[in-house]
Structure formats: structure tokens, C-alpha cells
Image (tube, rainbow, N blue to C red):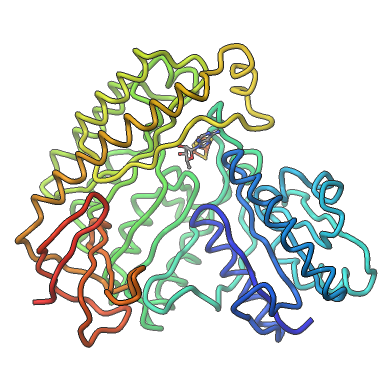
Length: 438
Ligand code: 5AD
Ligand code: SF4
């Protein structure tokens, strides 16, 4: 086993987990390669948030089966939420898989791969860790050298009725604040200019160390690390989004003017059935307090359409919320029934038909497209500070992000990823801006 490749599906937390696993393997002398075909060990980091994501895993595994046939020494490992959820079932459905590793056990992967090699039979390792703090893995292989993902907590205690995350990621586990700060300082020393703080329910962070910091205190300390230019964080739960977080956001210049605040639905009735722990008025109170800050904040959200029992009236309330808030972006999904979740039973009784789900999603997305076009049009003629990320999809233009997380494409110049540029905005689409360096 000399080379490895990790294919990552799903959220930023998975992307970062893959960086950690890559670091562990590289630390044992394995060499990362650019394609599954070139790898001796292939690791598939999976997502099970919606059914489609899970189906994708099985279709990818089907494709990888051919590689295994061609090279019998090839080792295939499945990590992530599908691994956690399916466990032994995964081996039954895909018997050519060598290793299944749950979300709490990544630190054991080098050892488990060795075990697979020695014993030659599949291993399933998905037991939860009892320790209230996640096991520290030093991330030495990151996606780039200017923006770093930093986990501050994992897991979720909320149990929204539609969601698998509390089952696949387990209960909340927070890293001690000193450890997080040490990591951020090290990153800045190594030249990183931006950190993206990660947690499934980041604003419910509770420092397990004797300092007992809450999220706002940690955020402030990270924003004040000398040399840091941009701090972002995701994802929040409205119930935990307390005024002290807003105060820190307003007063700390390095903290980006972007807040992701998933609402899921604009109907209090649906929110109750989702067990979201807030109603529409309480959510709107938070939005209003964000909008009254002097610092102009870009808002984004997650919305589910077609939750079981959602009526046309409920959906109209979602549309009217979106119209009222004027989010800079939304992530919208059709409700997808998930195993072990309470909404699964509701779906059997009062599921919304697929055609209605699709129609609602289309309406929501076309409304949001208009909102974004309108917002982006207003930015033409302004100058934005952009952190250059890399080549745009067309391979010719460059792209980067504003502090508010907007994507800006611009023409070639002498730039390198990680550089800050002032860009004059000259054009726009619904999802991005076009500009010229000034
Ligand atoms: N069906 C559809 N969307 C879901 N999400 C979570 N669970 C489901 C589900 N069962 C969405 C929520 C969440 C985002 C990460 O994924 O909007 O905020
Ligand atoms: Fe899932 Fe709700 Fe926890 Fe978010 S807060 S991870 S939607 S259970």
C-alpha cells in the first residue's frame, strides 16, 4: 500500500475530515495521487443527509468494484455518514469493500488499514467514542495554503425530526478553546489568511476547558489572533444565535460580514413539526437584530420544501419569508425521508407528492434567482476586496470571494491564489459577479 486517493462527498466538515485523514496517511509514508485509478488505497468519504447522496455512494462503489477486480491488492475503504449509518449492511450490499470507518474513528485508519492487509477480511469500525472531546488529528495536508478549515465542535444534540446528523455524527463534542487558538496561531504563522470555523451546530459551542468560553468568546479571540485577515463560521442554529455573537461580529473587523442562519421553513406550524425550537417571529427577531447592525451582513439560509404535511399555505409563508429577508443566497432542498428519523413516520401518512415538491422547489429557486440578480446589480460600480482562490471553471478567468462570500470572476493578471485584490465590479449574473482589478 503505497498511494492513496480520497473522494469526498457532502459538507465542509467531510472535506475537512478528508484533509485530516490525508494528513494521517501521508504521515505514515503513503503518497496522495490524483485519481482513484492510480491509488493502492481508495477512501470514499460519504454523505447521507439526503437519499440522493446515499444512492450516489452505492453507484460510486459499483464503479470502484472494477478497479478492485483489476488489482486485487487494491484496498477500498468507506468513511463518513453512510459508513456510520450502514455499518455491516454496507459490507452486505457491497462485499468488495475492505473497510468501513464511522465518524468517530478516523484516527484509527492507518492501524485499520494495516489490519486489513494482515488479515485480508473486511473490518467495520463504527463504535462511538465516549470521550466528550473529539480526538485531535493534526491536519497536515490541506486543500490550499491560504484558507484553512478548523473544526471547533462536532455532532448535534438538536434532533430536528428530518435530520440524520445527530445519528451519524453523534452528540455534540467540543474542542478546548486553547487547542483551537493554538491551531489558528500556527495556521497564521504558516501564511494562512482566512479560517473557516466548522461545527454542525457551531453557535452552541461550549468550551470543555476551565475557561468555559461560549462561542462568542471563542470567536472574538480567534478574530484577534495577530495576522488573521478573515474569519468565517458555519453552521448556526437560530436557537443558539445569541446577541453576544452579534456584538462580537459587529466589533471585530476580521470577522466576515456573512451569517448562515438555516431557517428550514417560513411556517411556524411546520417549524414545530420539524422540532426546530423557534417560531417564525423568533427567527425574524434575530434577522432584524442582524439587519440593524451598522456592519452590513450578508445572510444565507437552508430551506426544505415538501416536509410531510406542508400545505400550499405553509409554502407561501416560506416564500414570503424569503421575500422579506432578501437572503444573498439560499440552499434549498426537497424533503428526503431518512432512516431513524421521526419525520419518516409522518412521510408515510402525509408525504407531499414528488410533483408538488418539485414545483415548490422551482418556485422558491426562481424567486431567489430574481433576488440575487437584483442584489448583484446594485454592486456594479463598487470596488470589492477579493481573496483570490484559483482559476474559474472556464480555466481562463480567475475567481475569488468578497468578505460577504460573493464569488467574483475576473480576467487574468499577475495574481496568485491567496492574494487580496481590489476589484471593480463591472457585470453580474444570479450567482456571481464579474470584475476588473483596480
Ligand atoms: N431532507 C432534505 N433536506 C435536509 N437537510 C437535512 N436533512 C434533510 C432531509 N432529510 C438539509 C437542511 C440542513 C441542510 C444541511 O440539509 O436544510 O440545514
Ligand atoms: Fe440536523 Fe437540526 Fe442538528 Fe442541524 S440542528 S444538524 S438540521 S438535527
